[in-house]
Image 1: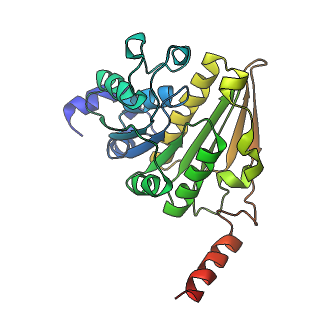
Image 2 (image 1 turned 30 degrees about the vertical axis):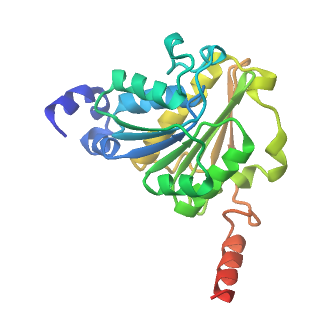
Length: 260
């Protein structure tokens, strides 16, 4: 860490749980953020400001005027621009030392797997269950920690999943029948709520990167913005989970061996 970096991140380095060692871990880290909307915006801004060395952004949408109510990484002048590149520009203004790779097309599972393998952490900042399920499968397959957030109306939730830790994965909590549920476009969302959850995603991502996972792995936090309340739920691993259970892995191994 050079003198410039020590000066820039001095307030974090003073924290006993971060220190120079923890800050160096952030500088050496690569994070993959899927979705640069209401959740991805504050998450990316705080992670870049905190000194994460490399951020890969995946979003194939364009900035629209209805996004600006909550997607704070974009500006009015960015309307019509691709979100991935609008976000890259804003991050460069905040921290030019943060290397950003912008992916402006919809990743298939094979591509997502390749990028996850290059990353230390995945942030799921998407807004639909099919994509979330795919991200979770990739997280488990590549053993890449996942921080998943969601928000709708005046409510939000966040959870961190550490593959191969004996804890749950995202699909231990949600089953396939959730694929066609409500969206923000249908139900609406209050702008600071996505800010709260996105910022919490950034915080949990930093904890994972510095190795402080014990208190967040498999813990679901539910936020009620109207009543200003948080609830905490410990998610058990589903022994019959189609993605992460020992039974599933055994079945896959047996199948692969039978085809050998």
